Image (tube, rainbow, N blue to C red):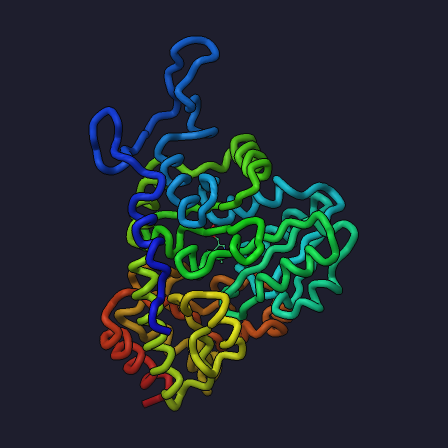
Length: 392
Ligand SMILES: *Cc1c(COP(=O)(O)O)cnc(C)c1O
C-alpha cells in the first residue's frame, strides 16, 4: 500500500463547490446564522426562505460533500442518526422490509428495532459479508439494504459490488445504502461500487475534531435527493449553520487526515499484534485480517479505527481502558484525539447480548480510534496500560 488517497480528492476537499463570498470576498463561506431570508417580492426569493428547509452555509457543505463523490450536493442532517432516519422515512412504507448488516452502529439497531418496527417496518439483521445470505433474506417487500463496511466495531467488510449485483440480478426495486462513516469518500466511494447512497455520520472523520455532530447522504438519484430534503424539512432534521461551518472546515483537511489516520492505525495494529497480552487484532490492512484481499480492492487503505481482544478477556480490557492517559475513554471516533471504547457497555449496550455475541462484539472487544498524535506516544500509553492489564 503506497498511495493511500486518490490525488484529485485532495484539492476537491478544499475547493469543491466553494467560492469566496461574492459580497465581501471572505475566503470561507460565512456562517449564515439566520432563521429567515427576506424575499424581494411575493414568490421571488434568492433560493433560501427558512433555515429548516435550506441555509446557505449548510448548502456550501452539501456542495462540497457532493463533489467528493462526483455527485450532486449532499443532503445534510443534524446528526448521523437523523440522516439514517430520514433515509428510512424517505424510502419505506408500512409493510416494507429492510436488510441490515448484522454488525452495525448501535443507534441503527435501535432505530429499526425500537422505533420503525412500531410503524410496521420489519428488519432482518444479516451477515452481509456473505451475498448468499443477503439473497436468501430478500422478500417481496424488501425496499432497502443498509450495509456498513467496515462495520462498527468489528471492522467486518461487505463486498459492496457483490450486493449491488445481487439486487441487479433479482431485478428488484431496492435501494442499496452504505454507511461509509469509517472510511469517508477519501478511502472508499460506494457509489462507484454500485450503491445508490452513501450515508455518513459527519460527526466522525469528516468534521474530525470532536467539535460537533452531523450527518450527510450523498446520491446521484435526483428524485431520491428531493425526497430526502422533503423529509428533512417536514420532520425538522436539517444541519444548523454553525455546525455545518465547523464540518466544512474539517472536510478541507479530510484527505490529509485520513492518510495519517490510516498510517497511524496500521502502525498501532502491527504493534498490538506483537504484544503478548493481545489475542487478536482486527484491522483491514493487516495480512492476518480475514478479509484482507477484499480490503485491498474495495478500499484505498484501512482507515483510522481498529479493534482488539486481550487474552485476559473483559476484565483485562476494562483495566486497560481505565488506565489509558493520553488516549481518552470516550464514545465517538474519527477525531484527532485517540479514543478508546468498550462497545459491549458503551456504543453497543442496547444491542441484545446474544445478538452481540453472535456477531463477534464480544464482551472483551476494545475499539480504538487512532488519532493523529505521534504513534510513539500512543504506543507508550498503550504499553503502560497493557502492563497494568497484565497485572505487572
Ligand atoms: C456514529 C455513527 C452513526 C451515528 O451518527 P451520529 O452523528 O452519532 O448520530 C452512524 N453510523 C456509524 C457507523 C457511526 O459510527
